[in-house]
Length: 173
Image (cartoon, rainbow, N blue to C red; front, side, top):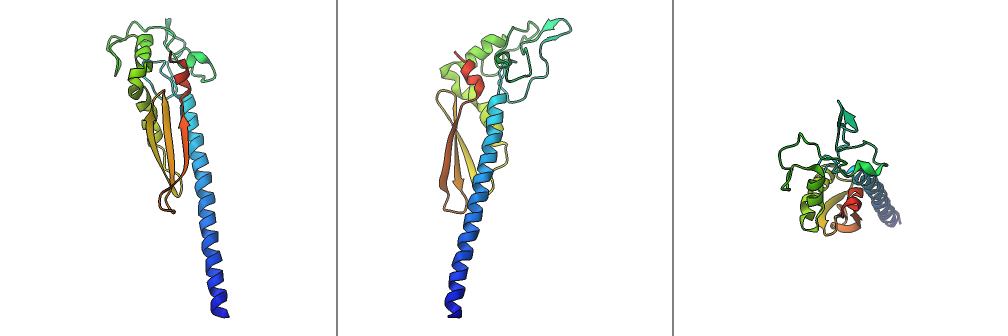
């Protein structure tokens, strides 16, 4: 009788631990996704290069209008360069131009999807992995980053797949 009670108790204890790990994992994935969605909101190409770093040279500085009109991601001028900065003379990476607006146009082009999405993906990859799970990313067509979360404690079972489109992608033509 004591042996069967101990067996039942051990089974319940294992399930409790497993449930707690699942709850922690799902909460950690939710937190990870919140961070990724913030990066997707902040992703901008207003400088001619795409980045999740909020621009600091905005508006008019020393009488020169900057390509980045604002550092506010709620303002649609945050995402796309407003002017070509004449002092920029070197071609932007993955483009054939030193013009901020033209460079972003080239980065946004369907044939340049990887160049457009790679800075975003690299920033997502630099985030800490969620608790009890592993995050993997893959660049898809149409400016989509597919994020797959797998359960580390359950034979790497896929527990969630999310497709994230950076807000900047909606300003691509």
